[in-house]
Image (cartoon, rainbow, N blue to C red; front, side, top):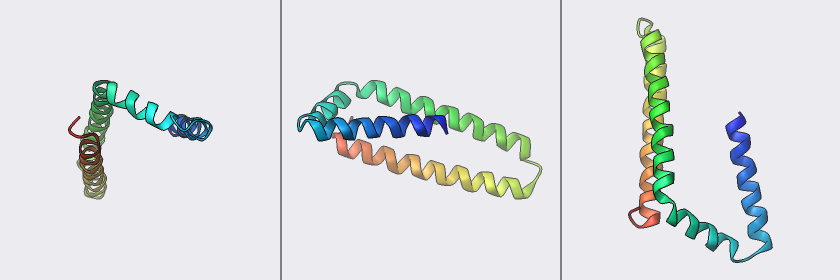
Length: 96
């Protein structure tokens, strides 16, 4: 919940600064393009932590078939979401 609140605050701050200055969105996009390696590393860390905790849940509940189906479903949907989001980011940044 804390991370969601932090992300929401960053988005609101970005929208507020973009409404004050017409150049703010372009400057933000240039900053994202300059620091794309940092953002790639950040996303890979988040994906690794998510995979680790999913694996830990799988190991703890692998004897219960109801939990196994739920964990597989959540993991599959998460993997599909990650693949789509990475494809969109890759396509929108021109290969970064």
